Image (cartoon, rainbow, N blue to C red):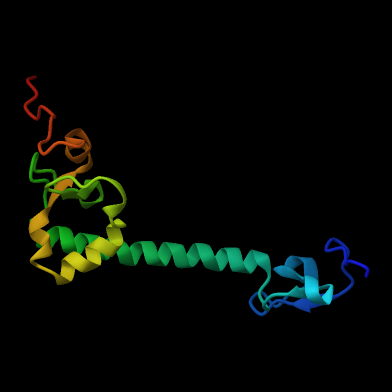
Length: 148
């Protein structure tokens, strides 16, 4: 049984997105061992697929930021400790610290908190600095009164 060399290509294929006629190595490929054959996956070249992935990630990031801003505004819009209001520095903080695997990814949690007002009682808005200084304790350890 002879194995195909994925580096050697004799076939050309047209990308559905950029419309260029490209070597089959420009497309994602998988080797099907049971058939001793390499198969091209999809009709979009690797370059177009990577561009699309970056665009989708940026679009999702913008949408998720809107959800974060909405939740922060509904929960007071500022750090409960120092009063900072820049949304990109504000974080969700567990009032009673949770350790280990019970933590949930922040955006999944944002969705839940937008819908569940009862669950919000276990959380507060804190800036990154105050939240980080809190560590495993229940209070911020930063001195917010700086004398000039």
